[in-house]
Image (tube, rainbow over all chains, first blue to last red; front, side, top):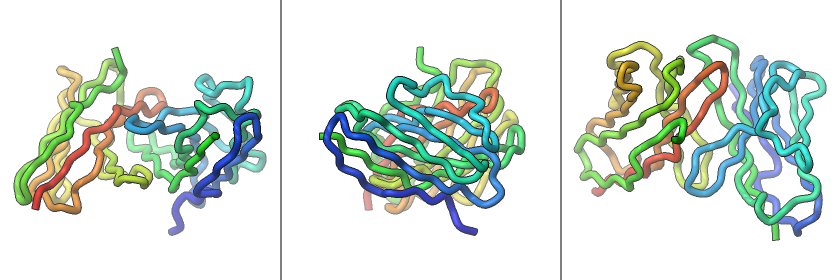
Length: 115
Length: 109
């Protein structure tokens, strides 16, 4: 079974430029998450989708971040414009709704450097 | 108070020894508890989860949960150099997974 796929793996941009990350979850997983991970910290949730609905975007900085999951499968996370402080690893995860046994599986992440 | 706190480490253990990792959480209503391993430059990978009080064993790993004390731990028996990584504790509450900052473990050959 293929895991969560993310692209690109690395991205270097200048501040104020836009950037987009793409994620393809594990086949059949209806729930998709975007996390941000800073060095030395655990992942922090940005947004959670159930199918195509964003059910928790309370931690997403909506002034510059946006996300979509149009057909309930692939998802895109966008930052516009990027700031120096956005340099981090952006992780996508997916899961199958199984209540207390719901387990999230992570993709390899996109490492973003904003200069 | 942070939602999930882990002992800061780093933790250095000799090969073959037991590594003990601790995690406390603040929300008493938390439902499930997960341990992830993260190698440097890689993404978190699931080791195991637990949601009932007591112990749960999977190979060389044992997770222990005490909901009354809001405490979960991970024991790694017969530690190997390949166990050298950062271990993240994560707590599930109402579909939201909250992570600790992680404990870095180094296994000395």
